[in-house]
Length: 327
Image (cartoon, rainbow, N blue to C red; front, side, top):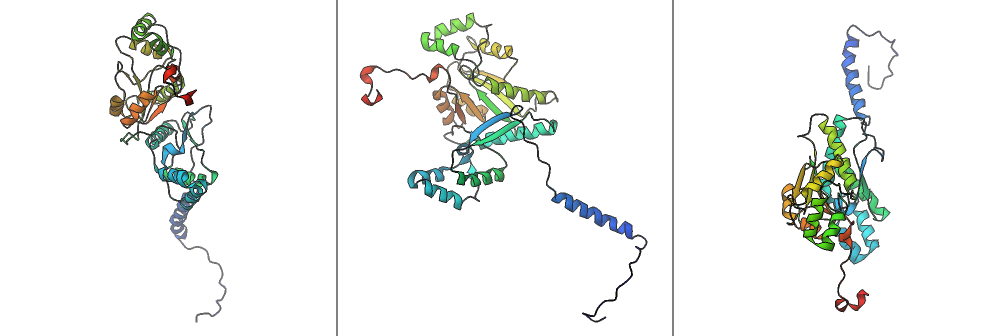
């Protein structure tokens, strides 16, 4: 038959012997191909009442120094224009990036052990950026696959674990109330030591971060129940200026009375916290005193200030030394 010549219609033929067998691999191959095109099942978003919610800012997760310079020097219009032009370029990781990566690593392990559980970390992005900048933030989140957190930036970068979440807490006015710290401020250390010894068996009232330690402990126990205490991807630290000999017992007994514990309790007896934090390398350290936050930052630790307790009371200066504008 010449090219282009009409083809005679042919009667349909029954498949020959072996045709069904030959077609089976082709069908299976096609099925696998189309199955791979279907969207994979993603973990469902946890309900807020079941999850441990971490709310954090974009400027802590991502480095936005150049963008901030443009905003400061050239104004909001140029800032928005720059962001739109670069919205397909992911931001570089910022100081909070390893912390959030560690949270995601814990979530992965939890979902491997408890596929249907909603008892995980729910990480929320908080930003006051212009709405037009949202596309670049979303693109950056999708690029790295994580959300973000609001944290103080350290003075230098240090390498921290991406597979084990490490969280360090101060004691008084962070895990505990500031009742003992008030005695130090009002009456000095000697009176403080006497008070703590006399009240050693009386639990301290809870502080603002007690609930977070409680949530971390709840997640740790999910690993312990699977025989993974030594391999648990969450590790907690109490890092306090208290002395182990004179005032440490009350802190530990308070945690015990709450049914809580930390993996390590470090009593520094007034020594700087920064060098020790450099050794344990937590992803985040909570303290109520900016002096300790600054010391942690100098050693490369991501630190968070807890605005609670007597340490937040401004110091009074003598009237003769006050500047007129301070009135």
